[in-house]
Length: 449
Image 1 (cartoon, rainbow, N blue to C red):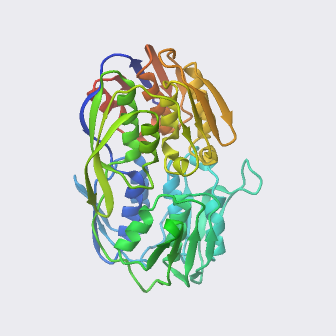
Image 2: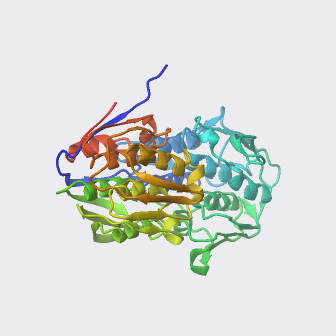
Image 3: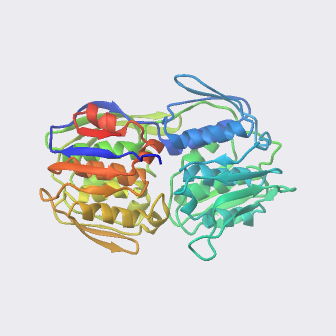
């Protein structure tokens, strides 16, 4: 039996200090590699995260016949065009990457050949009907497995084998999901007619930015709430261009949180993407009283980038709801960990989407906080957390195989006297392989083994 990794943290040791870069934004990395594969010629992608999730996307594209060469700086992709993918010789393993599985669903559902997408035990528990339904509406083929919820679809997924082109249609996304939106737009690249996608609030727009930069006839209207892809067809190609992947704000979040909690800390995090559809975290941290300064703002490859300077601060409870929740969804476990150390009550609302991530993140976050002695009320769409600054106890935490729960627990433990142990932490490698080593280099007493 394979021993699962664990993280051990001894809190309240010394301040965190220094300058650091974080891994490339894996959301942007997935898309840069996929669109590079569909381009009209050679594309260079630099700044990838190095995490397991992005590697799954690269390996799957290679299996589909895309030539990709690696060097120390990044990838050289020989784009094969929208019609240039070929049937893989075996199933495509997405590992723990929900983004890989959902984006490849859009990429492959309308292909003339059949593909099978598989994943690890955690990914196979994630519902896929939300992406399968609109792709089927467009004439694509996506079939999955029955599971815990009646009428839901779960991996493995079998896709494609379609003898005709997909057709454009109007899709109303019931939740703000950049993964579903991106899958629909990928399918629309090979469809006849206009595809229109509406979402209830604006989700991440990395796909729209990349497609527009590569010459796709994309229009974004209504403040970004509707994306329209005009007829493109398989006889057209995306214009080749290079991509520089900025630092991942979701990874930087854990360093921002750690420095905010540990007395006397001051960090500079360089080259972080600050796309406005992703910066809800910064707004929420400022509302809690965090001391973060955004410096050296610039544009790199169509994405806004900056350096973030953070120092320790006393935090207060706040309310995160509506659009702010959408723009900080991945960071809510980290915000919950900070709320445990804040004065007063923090309420997180409109976060039902967290129940269908790598784990049920609302329940897993609540369990993690209770292990530290925090009073938490779990609600259908969020959490109410009563802060206990200076009164938390060291904990033994089960991350349930969820990298964000594991890293949020580690940050929480940095401001707690004693030793905390976080089990089932292997999947930290999916997004931030050097997480523990980076914190240790900055002064934390933390190990991962």
